Length: 375
Image (cartoon, rainbow, N blue to C red; front, side, top):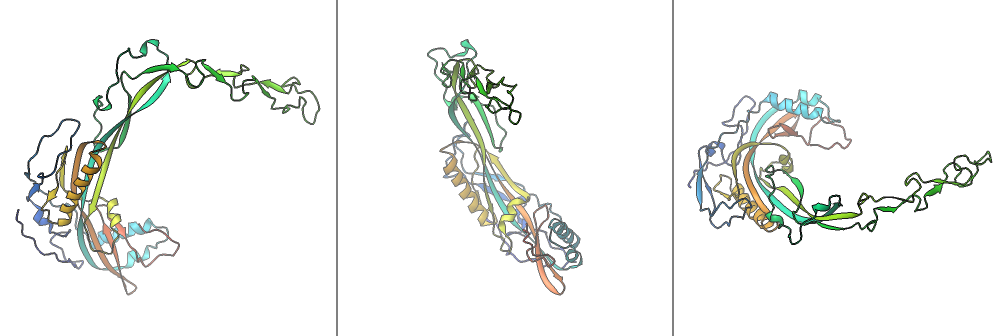
């Protein structure tokens, strides 16, 4: 697929001028409309999904219509309002500078974020037990437990981390309780089987302190009946709950995990890239299937390489230890506005990023030095 690429140019705007488009990533967004995409399948071995294989897929073409990001144009009013909201959230920032500064330039840019989500399922079995209360509930002789992957489990919610536990059929074994050795009762841990404990009033002295009279609570014996076991010296076994036997069974633990790979293209700004992971962008591409194939010929080559690397990594890591149920890859445009302004005759700059209009202002002029964290 041949495409004509226009050279990138920085967009230095006066407040009164309007750009051709509010977002300018490495390729003009206007070139993304009605473009032809190649989903590369050649040389990529599909992963074996548990819910039926999609079959062998040849290299295929899919024509996708990409809508222009509906991000509103950043204006002076919106830029100042975003800064005022940011200053109000910081305990040591003054709002006077945000209200009096003079905005000299709005440089509206954007960057791409690629994200691959691989929804995987893993299973393991572990032994568990419960009091044996139903004599007819044991498995008939000769039955063998099912393989963990042969059990049918209800469909999970896609791309959400969750864990489910269920019993493996035909895996039950009945044994005497290991705690009480099949007696149904265990020695009291308070009186150690004696049935009586030291009197809390006279503390075993048989007489009340200060009065030198016989303790009425223990009748002068210095000991009283244990309240925990009611004087029996033993109590109902907490493991078998007095049933004397335990039913051991295999418990299947099914874990669904949404594994995320994220890549943000280089924006070449004095701006921490990790902040962009915490905001949302405008979605311009989405591909979801049992398995997805690498994107190629995207206007920004970094995104194509990230897609190929992410899919290869997830296939290597998750295909051997779990089953891949679903994959989803998306491309978003994250808006970034570089705001140049003056305050007290000195130049400053701050950034507005994401659809939430978050602000990063490292050199904000009106702040005290109490060690606040800038976010």
